[in-house]
Length: 142
Image (cartoon, rainbow, N blue to C red):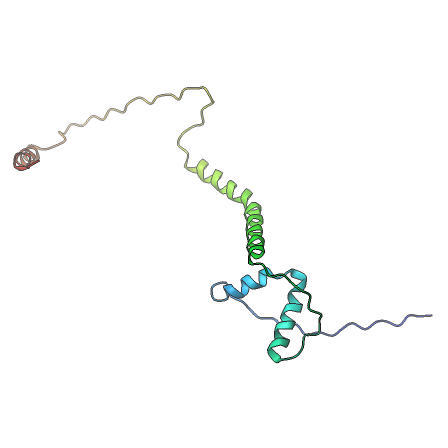
C-alpha cells in the first residue's frame, strides 16, 4: 500500500542588512543568540511588536551579563587562535624581508664589523663657517 507523501511547509524568507558601523548594537545582540534560536527570537520580537501572543512556550532564561561577556570573550579568543598561524606567517615574512642581521648560533660570538673609514678631501667646515662659529661661541652665555 503506497504511503501518502507529507507536504512540506511553505515559507517566505524575510531578510535585512545590518551594517557594522551603524548597527553594531543589533549585531552584538544577534551574535549573542544561539544559532538555533535566532529565527524564533525574531518571530517573538515581531509578534511582540504586533501585540500578538507568542506561539512558543517561553522558558525561564537567566540573563547574566557576565555570561554574555564570557561568551563574547571566548568567541574572540577562538577567532584570534584561528587567525594566529596566518599572523605569525606574515610576521616571519616581514622580518625575513627586512633582516640585515644573519642569525648566529647560541654561544657563537658575532663577527665585528671593521670601522668604515671615510676619506674626504674637503674640511668639515669652511674657513668662513669656522670663524662664524667661533664668534657665536664667544657671544654665547652658558
